[in-house]
Image 1 (cartoon, rainbow, N blue to C red):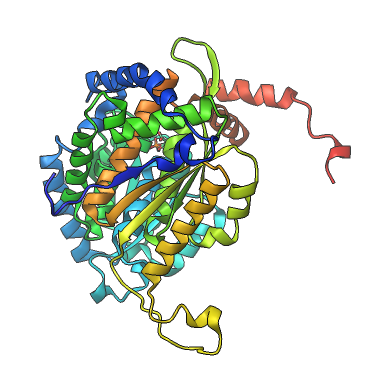
Image 2 (tube, rainbow, N blue to C red; image 1 turned 90 degrees about the vertical axis):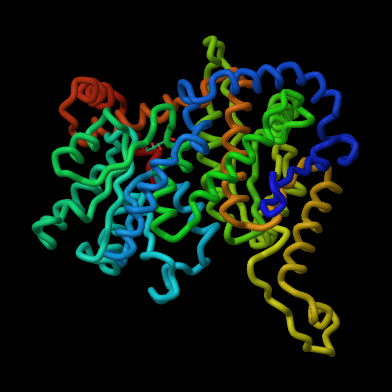
Amino acid sequence: MQDQYPRIRLDVSNMMAENLGGRGINPNAVDRLASMAAAAQTAVQAQRGAGWLGWTELPYNQDDVVARIEEAAARVRARFANFVVLGIGGSALGPQAVQLALNHLHYNDLPAAKRPGPRLFVEDNIDPERMGALLDIAPPHESCYCVITKSGATAETMSQYLIISDLLKAQVGEGWQRHIIAVTDAAHGNLVQIARTEGFETFVIPDGVGGRFSELCPVGLLPAAVCGIDIRGLLAGAAAMDAACHDVDVWRNPALLAAALQYIAAQELRANIHVMLPYADSLRCMADWFCQLWAESLGKNITRRGAVIHAGQTPTKALGVTDQHSQLQLYTEGPFDKVVTFLKVENFRREQPIPHGCADFADVAFLGGKTHSQLIAAELAGTAYALRRAGRMNQTIILPRVDAHTVGQLLYFFELCTAYMGELLDIDAFNQPGVEESKIASFAVLGHPGEKYAKKRQEMQQTPAAQARYVL
Ligand code: PA5
């Protein structure tokens, strides 16, 4: 990797028993896992670009797509004041994470001349107050809507599409279709057919790229490019991380080592909670994106061979330093059921010097002459030390700076780590059958005419209602 693109690094010292007074992971446990880890790496490499591992090739196979995205982004920038993503899950969390990481922290509030693109809104939820609130500040005639859904059947997204297309027809009239860009599967699902019928500009979510692994395809690249983000840098960063994770030796492959340590932490030491703790506001939504990736991929009840497993660490997010004043007490003194992953930024893009003052108050005056970078770094160091002293496993991912390249590295690192973890657990990390039941039941409640929903409706009607004495 070239020098101008520093690599993010992984420091796992505080995962190890020798640094935690005996409570953490013994290096022998990692050595014992070495052959399983090597098999995980071999399996992932062997399936590159195939099955649900289509995302592994995204850094390399999108030259034409990237050029088209950049053209479309330029057109959107020239014409619209707002770019609204309609999507949920993997279609929403990545775009939000990358936008917050790489654009101004108050991007939407900047005057248009100071923004590299239109305001970005990612509308995932269907809280009935939400769409109206958006429309109050971003009217359809000046908005472009990017409808993102792989399946084309997601009720939340398609209901939003119905609302917006209806409004566009009424308020914009002829040419309303130019306000919509579809991002969906090439052949399957409702949206691709609707897009063909209506003539929407369309980008394809490639085969083998599931929602939560889709940030580096048009799902994430289009919103990022519209907002002026260097999408080629993102892909180059992902490729660099891929290159850094080719070794079958668990001690020489950072994503594989991270997976092996989490596997041991969860399976042997019962650390079933994984706290993602960025010490940077820009990485706050990266924690949300990670939580979905880790939860939906690894929370599985059976192995690929059908054995009962009920696997999966519960990912949870926090923000440094904010959550030192909220969650840290629990992390240092509560149950020994957590692993903390710090995201540390070495060089922030702005600095905030702290002026001298309050000379008579030693606890305040000592801050004078320092900077917020120094303060946040000291607080991260202090928290890692406190956790270590309390025998709590923690690891640090160090970003030399937050830019397109390091964010691309980070995304790919977590995706690989998740795929390795799936291999180690011998589960299918790419499906989500546990989400299905809730979906079928809610469609049944809404009166979907399909047979399976009618059956579910019947089943639900036969289920005893809540008993009065339990409802207060
Ligand atoms: O990771 C996943 O597959 C899910 O979280 C999906 O992204 C989410 O359910 C939305 O699905 P779709 O893209 O089909 O609308």
